[in-house]
Length: 98
Length: 401
Image: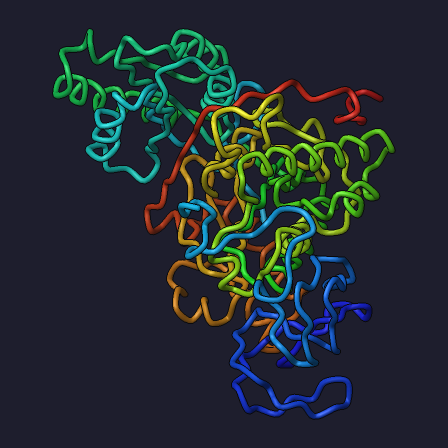
């Protein structure tokens, strides 16, 4: 079990083991070469995702895409956002001088 | 397994017999801490409130903790000129049948003399607390809290749903189970409301999450730390869905606010976000503040799930740490009680880990020290807040009786 489908409606998979760039993944019966390293607990696209599309995990919406993603592509802060409250990182706290 | 509890005069039973040394303003913190350090006893714990201005919430929480079933005696350490109502706190503790002493630094000869008197007072309080009767205690008499901290993308798959399994078993056995952080339920409000035992309670559950969302929006940050993102969580609602799974699948029977005691067994939401206009800063400045509020609701112990690897424990009530991430467990095994991340690696199931948590709850209630207890973790933090009392729909069982 290296990728977890938490709910049949989900359009992302959660990694139970890290993947490495160049590694071949089996997703929906297709062989896809991973474009980047992705760590345990992170998400990858289960199918192609378009801008504005709701991301579904546990069968529930957890945000919206801000950029398209190919199947197996890392889905994270660079291509999706909250529909409630913006998230922050240590580098971008929102307190930097404008 | 039989639990031998400490019988308090209000009928509640504790699983520990702690002497609490409480500073009533930051200016008394050093003296209180030194009294605890010199007492050199794992069952003498430091608690306190740092502010000099009065706060009804802080008084309520300190009264709840001073009369917590795990507490057998209390020493108050006051500078002397601060606002904290030490007379009200001492009176509440005394009325509960517990021994309580107060030292006022300005009237006790200063730092060195107050420390000397404090160490003597702790010895007296320990001796009095040791006379507390021991009686058998049922699972149905336990109050169990849960919190997640340092969550990552594994938390909502392994440790949190495993705690949910344990909560389902504990609740079925009659225990009161309390989950919390309404700010970490943003996005789950409708799903959660559908589990309320009455429509009115469901509306209150949804309202509590809307309040949290509005509060955090004013603050400018959700309840979301950079480590959450580094661990694969992208949004508040994604973190929420994972956090929510700690609540298991039982019906939700009520809402508490900090310092309220669950009147029956079953599953409760603790609403930790202040009422009214946004004042005093973030609702909970760290995980430790949430644990203190669970304890103020009577939690005998807390189930703490972590993905990134929190190491904390707590004063007053033991903390069981359930590690969600197998990589974190390998790095921090000495800080973890339960390896739930093994589910990710096919070395266990949610039901097996849930049963392991349930069994450990009983063992810890029976006196076994948790890892964080053995390591000496006794974190405690209490800050300013303001709450309105809970509404009539929040405790439907009590209203119906």
